[in-house]
Image (cartoon, rainbow, N blue to C red; front, side):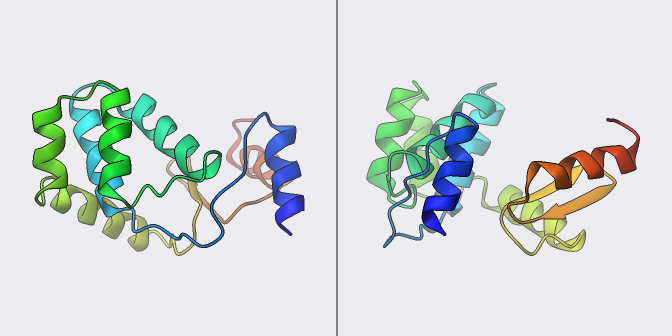
Length: 138
């Protein structure tokens, strides 16, 4: 299965090399991305954390890894320490998680398309093509 997933990612120009023994607790990573959102850098931070985990086998649940990635992204060190050393943004992450659960997201990944249709799990392109057709946005 891993080879099939790696080939699927590779065909789309993405790396797939998560560490097989690490399933990170991503709460701190999620809180760090909320800091980045407030600073106007959510997308770059999200993408960098995803690459670190999926392609580079980094443990994005480890605060030292997160500190290094935050420095690379030039996030303000003092604010990063405030997030990683406390519970800043915890309520926002909890609210976002609750919202996802309330619409039926019970798998990762979960895609809420056009705020109307939920697609759960890693799905083939055809599933998304049909979903967009169903939504009338294809």
